[in-house]
Image (cartoon, rainbow, N blue to C red; front, side, top):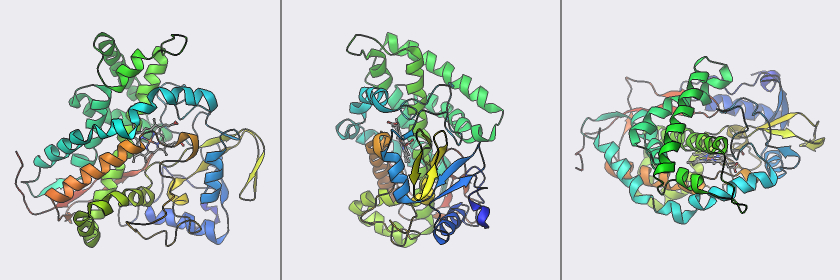
Length: 405
Ligand code: HEM
């Protein structure tokens, strides 16, 4: 690629390589950034923004939320179903913390641990659906379904309803940047479903997070408004479905190709748990969070002006050789592994414990039930680019096994 690698950068249109991923294109951006020592480069797309490629520079941005604000219409474009700031991700300072405190306990390691058996049952049931066939799409039939079930439980809705929402969530986060027509329809479907659910939760509250939000009162006795509730619903559904589905599907894709790695992880549950961070670093499904510069600043030797947008692009930042030795190698027990796949600073992913548990349980059940599988040579894996990015379809073959039930 030429020196226009920064000016023309477009994460919605990266070239997909022969391995069916954009990893090679990501590496080329990183290589060019290192060769020219450009830790921040100007990109002309989406109204113009600074593309941040360096780990130190990304960290400085994430940690200084006064200079680098989240209060912007997200650029480059990202999910936003209401026109208002995205709940949590779109707020700064005390207002952000006030919202975050409402739901923080629900995402604590203790509360998340109560979901372990549900995750195990989900994985077992899904595998029962294809284990006696000898082939499956481990993206569409496993990686993308486990998080739907989580969303259903999180919101207290039937599993089928969460499955129906997924294409609309997908339409928003993948089509918005491209200005595709079905975005408006996706917005209205999600908002209609939310209002039905809200009526139900008000009548019959449960232990789900929507019931918690409906019953919440601030110290002055004020309840959350209907807009705030819709914004929570939208941010949580999106947070739980997209990135998690991509991480699980990316993982099975790599395991289908790397037989030694798969056998090592199957034999060593501790290594599987440690490798969670390396899968996150290696694939970085969330592209990163853009920030608005609120006061002139200098980062990585680059002067930035108030009003400009900076975008730490995580797939590249997580391959910065100044932070990660041999960054293109997959090292399951890499330590330290200070990746930013779940961001950093006050907006660090709230679902971090949840996704770790979901990943470890689902992957360990899969490796126990189907220890050997490989990519189906007659079918093609499919990666999708967008506000988040990752494998969507991972067709595999394996020796037929027996259903558990
Ligand atoms: C592999 C899975 C996941 C990845 C890669 C991921 C990534 C991220 C990233 C990068 C951010 C910060 C964005 C920014 O700094 O602007 C974030 C925030 C957030 N994530 Fe996740 N996430 C994942 C799973 C989840 C799950 C399962 C949930 C649960 C519902 C969730 C809920 C959230 C929420 C609510 C925030 C906003 C936090 C805040 O602004 O205070 N995420 N996530």
